Length: 253
Length: 253
Image (cartoon, rainbow over the protein chains, first blue to last red):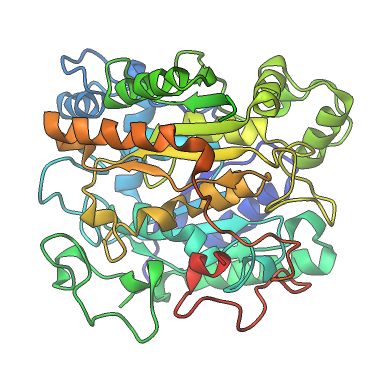
């Protein structure tokens, strides 16, 4: 096993939370395996969550997206953004850890995504931009560690909230895989509102086992954009879906 | 037709953007029909996007979610949050308008959701909390107006990004319907990166027609939690799905 460097991006407002305890367990487990870690604790850092012109330095384009790309090319993006970009480039694995709020990440972490994965780094507006299996973060692993107040059944395949896998598709496929990373199956700790001591211990145990197997975990088998599965309109070619697959599952080979 | 009051929550960093033009068209169209509007322009308001203890005033509970509920009950939530809650209560329809960034809303709008729809107002941790078809905003209409840089095909049923309807499920079902609102089919303006004059005119025309029919538009037929379709674990009962439906579509009757 090669030691890896893992960058953890973490968001929770309370230092005494379940999430804080899980974060500490994660770091301990990774370092005990010989991996190194860096941590961006977004609340503690008072991370600026709103993408705006203040991020860009002097730009000429008025279109915000184009101006973001201009700032990236000319190296005038603010220091906090460039620091996070470098942390990502230096990492072998990236962990996003957060409580699921309104079925996605808290605003402060969404603001990390919006600002760090900017035009020219995380995505491009040019045709043929390398994405979905290729990109600036290709070859790295991406892992979401997510707590939900809701019980597991409520977030299962037929659960009223939608399945946790579908809810996390925009992150696993739309952020990790989009930028080139392998998306590992997420670690989901459910029932966080009423978690008792046994539930907590079981959750920690599951988290530990997943992190101890980080290097050899099979990623979600998303289809590469350039793998031949999509037509020129970026639609999955007819007949390629697994039997019965529909919705987001179409994009798993 | 009864005149309605429409509260528009809007997020885009650029005052000269496509989104700004569409917002102005929306307001003009609604007011020409005799409706009244209020607007929360989150960037212009410098909306505080991060939910934290500063929002809560004096609280005793250390758990952030519980403390949020405590602040709601005791009336100590910050003024900006309570003002938005009142605007929602006063509205007959709520519009969320935003560019799709990383497959969901920009961070500043996510922070509006996180902070305004707080514990005790938008959701509860008590068993039997009224949600999915019932709730504090019951009887109101919810409408998302969304622009995407990606072309329509890329966001269609077999499109590589996932379908726009699935990507917006966490908003239509998870925010509008969760809090009791009827979720209307979204207005999606695709290909925003390369929109020419004709494309813009067609988009505006579509937006106008949708807003002119706001009162009589059929909402998405999500299943009410208390309608008998879910079992005691909040899972859709076997056999109730429409033929071939899976994933998020299970929750449409």
